[in-house]
Length: 340
Image (cartoon, rainbow, N blue to C red; front, side, top):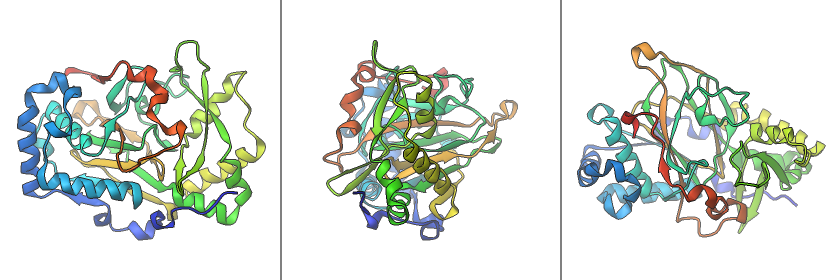
């Protein structure tokens, strides 16, 4: 029977209406600590994957990041780091800063079959009806609320779009609990495994879909995996299990709830901002946007998927070892030389 879980991590929009609640503004001393750490690794741009937490010491900022990590897993579930002076650093240096901060939060996970540990979120010319396209490759359109494939997802803004593209987050934990309170039969249905499309990135000879519940409980914690477009896309494969009627109604209810302003926070990234999200409690999306290449206003984020040490245990289908056919490559997305 589905239960109400982790009520201490529930929030509504009114609880976090003041951006100061979720924005960690770096001070001059902390930026200086980043500068010092960057100086240690600046000559290792082409060997970024070898840089670990111990190579990027952060002093008191490192202690602050430890507190942020606990808040991400046990509390609000999202944060924005602000105060890195974007104009001071080129793209390579920004990526090194981002990677170094990320290593203080966890171990990087591969994001696709290319083994990208540091990915790009920008218009990569993919069409929405391309069965291999993924959200980070699609430009201009908005993205519905979804989770990524790791404990934490990080997004760093290198450049804003000319218009739109705001980041949105919603408290999926609160949505789960409200579903249990008001429609327990729908919540229960989503504890059953649902099919997800692999987007053509399954291991060689493997099935083109995988099965994961939307909701999983373990050790009194809630774990959520929800990527509605991939669930729907899985039905294109004739051998994929069909979505049950009650599960379909439950997901339609979730989709409506994610659009309810009481669960939602909208934030407008500034260049240099870094957002981290707990994928198991908070879904994220984005608003449609318009790029303007002539002015250089082309929305470009860098992405990290991270495995946190705060979570000592996680359900089998949330463990990194299930995608070792991605892990074997371990690389950095390099759309051009400037974004290495």
